[in-house]
Length: 389
Image (tube, rainbow, N blue to C red):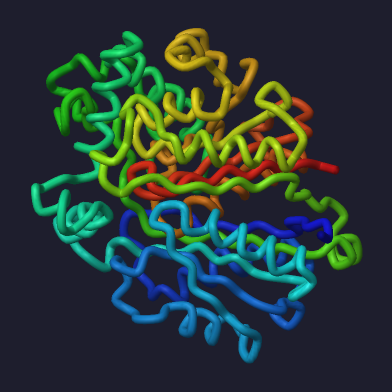
């Protein structure tokens, strides 16, 4: 198949309550991406809109967004895999371009979660589980990940302090990210101070500080064939490997809760396709919707042996200066989590890192970067490996 590159990236600020419409929100990331790529809407052969439809008041938002962005009469598609929608959209764009079906595809991730109330949002998140066998019992995202945390603690001795250390790292870099929702410093002491919001219980052992926040936001990736990439871009970033997998929706159908098998399988496929291994990764973005999710990612990606994630965070090995920098843009814990835009935002960070354009959070001379994006409670696993060559 043909080589495929990312030639433009864009992202809006992630905010708690965006005042405009979804089409106006989509424009913010799109404008930045086409400017970055040096192209116009007329150069785009197809577009893919990625969002979770249960949060959208607009039915078939891809049609509205394509019209507003000047992407008619080119085909537009709609992709949904919960929180990993825009990573799945990137895989679809890769396939379209690699097959020769299209030369330039825009992947637009979008979510305006403030269109519904927090209570409505939690109810819809609960429906990400099986509506016949699990969600009627009141399951919510924090409770699911709390079960994963309890299982990991029971098997490997991970502690609440290890979880808090993940959030401390996130805040270290979130303060430097002008696109992030949460830009305040967080200290370990905040988690033991009963007067501090961070210590408030959510679902044991998870506290407020262990959870990311909902957000409104958009991301955009411009994906192109090698021929187009070389004509448009001076710094194309190449898609070296893409792995995707799925797992049982019902937790009762899984053989273990201390790991996410879909992430492990997706990583295995991505590494094989790229011809690299965990030790070859210079910088990574992982799906830290909850602090335990980041630790699970370390192990799924092979950065640590099973049970070894806690040693990485204790030793600050995943800080910018460490052996494997992870989420040096603050991650979801600092940026917020606009469901459909998250994967594209993660990819944008890695593209900027590989181009040496990440500013204060720049890792030294990265050549290969990785994005790990999970949909739902480990239902959909997506791992993408990018490189400069």
